[in-house]
Image 1 (cartoon, rainbow, N blue to C red):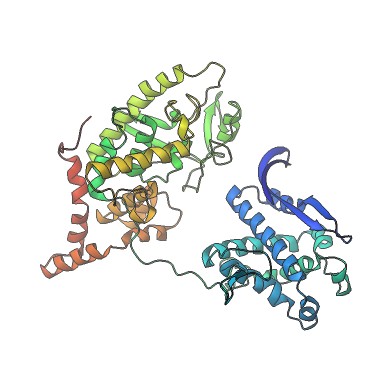
Image 2 (cartoon, rainbow, N blue to C red):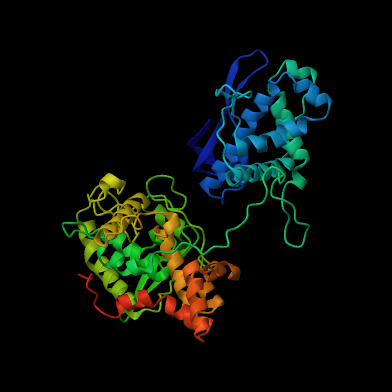
Length: 501
């Protein structure tokens, strides 16, 4: 079992995915124990995300279950004598993760000789778990206290202890761990796990990334966030504008403080900082944001596993603070500036004035108005939540679908480009089709790698046809690309029929 629990780690309390093992002892009695070795592994890798740790716990739990199932096989001793245990224990685990353990008999009944009844995960997710397991056993190879847990048992011991298969699998993984991992740059490249024959390397898609439909983006920003009564989720609306206008990942805006917004004249400058290690001025000195939030009884949102949780993938130069860059559309930037001023100087203060005196203040820019309580928004004035924004975005997308009588297209689906990440994709595609050079796109999107922007250079089939049509008329590819985004730009040059304030 994997249970999210609070554990004491390196002098403080942390939320961790704790793996509990329920194993029979030599007398056949079930014993419940916490896997302390895995918690040591988490402590040595505390900078990693909770999801990364949970994958390691899931992978180790799968190894335990599968190894014990193999240990119960009547062929266990024979496989060991023939030297076939490695295939049964390790490759069998990989195959079971990919394809599941169930089969359909000729009679139509579902049979499972392992009695695990695993559903197939597919190659991609199985590779994630196997890679996590590889990293864990690479770490265990250099952990002296691990030897007593993974010591190989004798054949005779198999009859006495059903955990012998687990011990053998662990010993095999540790012994082979150097061949399981890829190496650093300059060294021979190896697969990230030992099962490339079972799980081939996934082929990255060469198709264009799904982006928010340009023809609906203006109406979505202007009208999508107002309900039938004219009420608006101001935080959700403003976050949507920042995603489109600045190319943010969905979670990045949730880490903004009010002090991260600075106006130079009427131009807003928005700075992004690492949620933990970014600096802020307090009491005349620079302190980390983690230390600053502790004054309010809060955790950095990338480490919070409760309602306030918000991920942080990382932005180039985020420890020093890095600015956001607006799409080159003046009227859109001016609209964002108006919304920011209204929110900072009017909306947010009015919300915080309604906040209970028993609840503490905090520095986060976006706060719950109280109207989003049923969608996980929290109390009035609490930090605005990801779940509240997800609900707000989904409703806005559906309203535009109804407005333009296109409900089949305007549903929040990743492959349609109508999720928040589709908005970020639109930002990158717009810069590319505007002729912006790759290194500039890298800075605008805060990519650490120059190659990351190349995903936005892929064209859709209709765009390829447009380029070829223009080429037949004597126009260059640059001419075609610049015309691809005109439909969106024109929405902000004039006052369209769908716009109302």
